Length: 420
Image 1: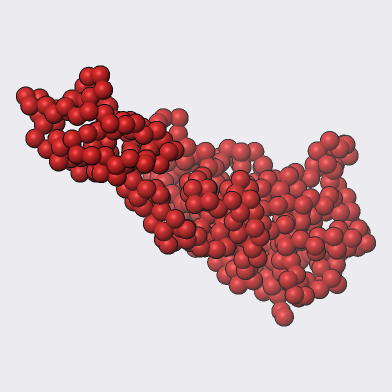
Image 2 (image 1 turned 60 degrees about the vertical axis):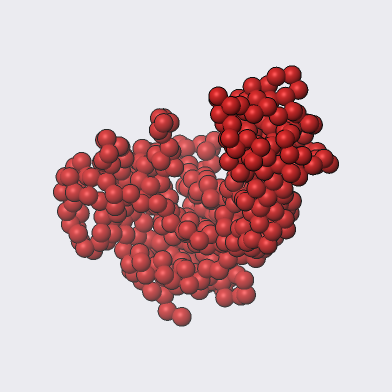
């Protein structure tokens, strides 16, 4: 199979998605299921609520008994019995009586409404009602939330706190979810050291290993850091043989356009077929992708070595692939429309992802560059809330122009104000 070179980002994305399939299922305990994607549809085995119950602390009664009540002609009803929450009432409420009832308690047979305790006057063992009460007022009807046999959650649903609570309400303590991909992270180069290593003599910290692992963890994938491979065929092969146990290999170990050194030859020796090499985007042109031919072999992403390029290519290609493997339906970052506060220019031919700072100015979103757009300027990623999409064929974006921005900082969508 020939390797496609210098393709568009859209072509690269299509090639990758053709090779990606959701991983199999595993059963996990409910407390461990947050953020996971369902492999099964969940059908309610019972009604929620299981029976009519009171939405308020108050008094259960019959609406017909107080139909004509008003402040001039109140109706007095004796309190026949009391119903605490968690106890099924054994008595039937007779006409002309009321029953003290607490929030969540089952409504007794014979009663068809509940009046709040604040809306009555209690006089000893009687209540005085000064207004009519509609049928089923302040009663949660059996099955009004979920009916027995309803499909409550569908396969492919990501589980949030609400879904976890619903599953608990239905008695589901074990649930089938898609497996999380294990991602082997390999960095390579004799110049690289760990963060606490000696950086004298031109050595640099292998920051990519940590940023890429963090990007994996952010979406729930499981990174496996394999350390730094030295620039020898033997050491690179050893690292990649270990990496082949994972579902995905992410390497920033010298895979770049025109590179015919040890990494590519080792991958080919181990049975990896490269599908493309080089994507017309900036930052991140030197991106490679392939897969091992053996059944269930891992996908391989060869990312650029520059820190920003590695993170941006992960965002655009690795992240969606991992989400798809986890069974997610929504694979891409949210985008917003924003007004550009400065002109931007580039040459035609490559799609640019411009790191931008986003702000809200009243009802208008604005975007301006974080400054230095070098692929090695890692600080620009800490300053950016988004990646502005500068189309390949365009050469100029003017000040005030509306642009599309991927939001990469979840905190930007949060607020210091409550909104109410």
